Amino acid sequence: MFAVIKTGGKQFRVAANDKITAAKIEGNAGDTVAFDSVLMLTEGEKTTLDAKALSEITVVGEIVEQARGEKVIAFKKRRRQNSKRKRGFRAELTVIRITDILTGGKKPEMKKADAAAAPVAAKAKAAPKAAKAEAGEEEAEKPKKAAAKKAPAKKAKGEASEA
Image (cartoon, rainbow, N blue to C red; front, side, top):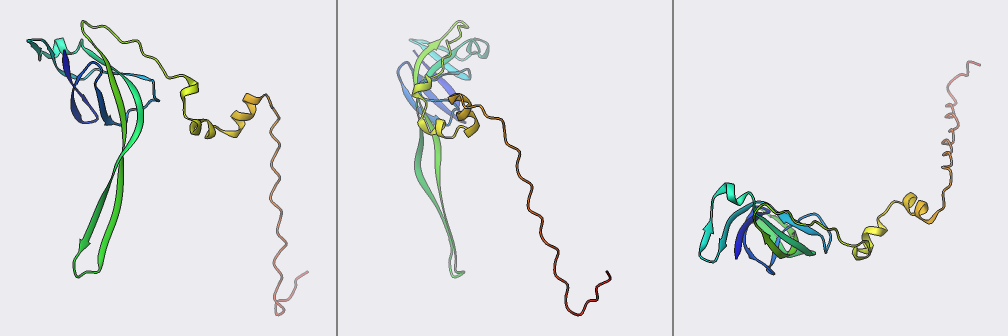
């Protein structure tokens, strides 16, 4: 059994245990994702193209990793104009392993990855106040000091003082 799904503006032919690389999908490694936009389903000799029947089919996958694609260089040169431009681009990608194709309106069991599997960089970006609150150090916020006032500008010698 295989299905054709649409995600990230592209179509993929998938079966159970296939790995696909699609445009970035939010989530961490180990999260479950569901694809509802099924365009075709084939079971043996039977092919389903009916939109009503396809709306009850869900393809379930698990995020393997978040990755970045190959670097693509866009180089433009205008000859004899002393003009050139070089830009690089790397697409954000998600590697997904298809776990199951559910038919008959069944819904998948969605799960989130464990907090231990979350990248350490995400924890490092946490706000310092949150880190203190987790550690049990709750301090009242200290009021900020007002900015020091500047001394008035000195008057030039030619100006008369009116005091």
